[in-house]
Structure formats: C-alpha cells, structure tokens
Amino acid sequence: MRPARTLAAALAEDVVVLDGGLSNQLEAQGCDLSDELWSARLLADDPGQIEAAHAAYVRAGAQVLITSSYQATFEGFARRGVERDEAAGLLARSVELARAAGGLVQREVWVAASVGPYGAMLADGSEYRGRYGLSVRELERFHRPRIEALVAAGPDVLALETVPDMDEAEALLGAVEGSGLPVWLSYSITGERTRAGQELAAAFALAADRDQVIAVGVNCCEPGDADRAVEVAAAVSGKQVVVYPNSGERWDAGGRRWRGGATYDPGRARDWLASGARLVGGCCRVGPGQIAELAAAVREEFHGRDG
Image 1 (cartoon, rainbow, N blue to C red):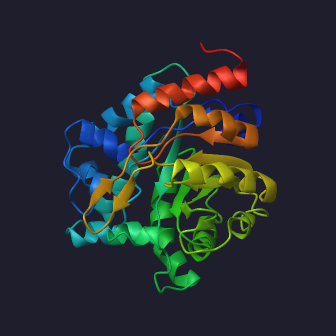
Image 2 (image 1 turned 90 degrees about the vertical axis):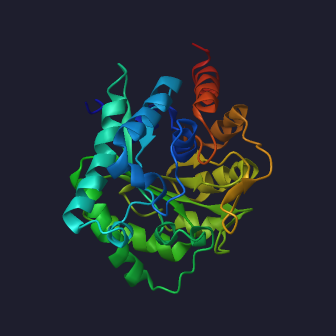
C-alpha cells in the first residue's frame, strides 16, 4: 500500500529514516553475493531473500526502503543471457519486493528505486572513481531505459545514488526528466570532493534549479566525510539533505573485500540533523541493529522523545 503522503511532504514536516546496506543483510541471511550481478542476482534466483532483508529494516524502524536495483541493468542481465523483457520484469520485481516488505507494518514506508552509477554495472570498482570516458549524452542513453522500467513499476521516488562525478549527475538528471517521479541525488565522496575530484558545492548546486529533485546529499562514503557534506549541501542546494554513509570500512575492489574498522555511530545523526539533514540512514555494512539505534536517536532528537 502506498503512503498517504509523498516523501517530499514528509520531509517538509519530519525527519525520515532510511534503511541500511542491503548486501550486508543478505550476506547475514546466508546469501552468496560473489557474482558480478551482486544482490541483483537474487531478483531471479531467490527473491524471497530480498524481501526478507527489506523486512529486517522495516522492523528496525526504516521508513524508506531502497530497492535491489543498484547493480541491475539491461546490459548486466544480458551478459547472463537474460532477455530484455525478462530483465524489465526483474527491475519491476525489485520495487514489488520492497513494497511488499513495507506493507508488513502499520505506518508509512516509502519505496525508493535505486539507480546506481554506470560503474556499478562494470563491477570493477569504477563507481568509486567516475570518469568512465563516456560523454554526458552517452551516460544518459545508458541510464534512461532502466529508469523507465523502474518508473513503470511505481516506486515513490528514484534514488540517484553513489554518483561519483558531476558528469554522471548531469546525465542522470537528464534521464529522469519527464518521468513524473521525484528524485534524490546522492554523491559518493572523499573528503570535501566527489570521487572524481570536483568540489561539493558545485556538485550539489547542479540540482538547485531542478524542481524534480527533492533532496541532495551523500552516501557510500566515510561517516566523517558526511558531516561536512551535509553542511555544504544545506547551504548551496536549496533542497532537503539526504545522508547515508558506509560503516567506515573501506572496499578493496581488487581484493573484493572490506578492510579497516567500523566508525558509523547512529548518534552522529544528531549532528546531521542540526546541520540540516532530513533523510538519514546507512549504506554498506550498516545493518538493522544500527538503523534501529539511528531511528531511536532521530526520535529523541527531533521529537524530544525516545519512544
């Protein structure tokens, strides 16, 4: 069932809690994600696991579920012999599974259809670098068919997420024009720059005059980098701010493993809220337990209560 309010209306009145990392929850459920399609493989092979992962976040207090379509593309499925019509059906299934999980509770749960960067399809870590050697027009042509398939499935919002550079942001914003759905634009960053090295102020300002964009911010970055990014996004974009960093561990694309220790602290949300964030959550390696703590921190800080 769809929420009574749009997500934009909710953000104008309240703080909204996102879910955490889908892949780490699937791995906790015993799923093998070593395939190049990553969690998208389960859309065909074991969709019940995806719905169960979404449900874990709903029970933890998440109000927005991000679909398993981050690495789901027509090109990626084609390499596995999946025909175009079937691939479109799998993209639609990603929305349906999140919607079904959201229906498990008697409160508003929005579904955000994940539109990951071009580099995610390559499965070689290039989404952490950007600058693929493609023009904005070429990137827009790549993204548009997948966006159209996801829009047809009826999500509440499109999450243009883990965007490494402004060229791809421009392409994504062009590809969603006319879709009729609100979007948020979320960059992956290092320090105070995009992964491709552009200044955050310029990156966030790219969405300032786009009425379709309801929030801008960062995800898939270190928690410490998110702090300053929230301030910059609030100052230059004129939009609500979205923030959902990683655990603080670092992905080694060559070794295909996470390294380092976790630094994600749900209590950090108090600083994000004070700086202007209104859509907060976690990305890779942030699980339901931390989202439950985050939801409690948001309730206490924003509503003055912890229940």
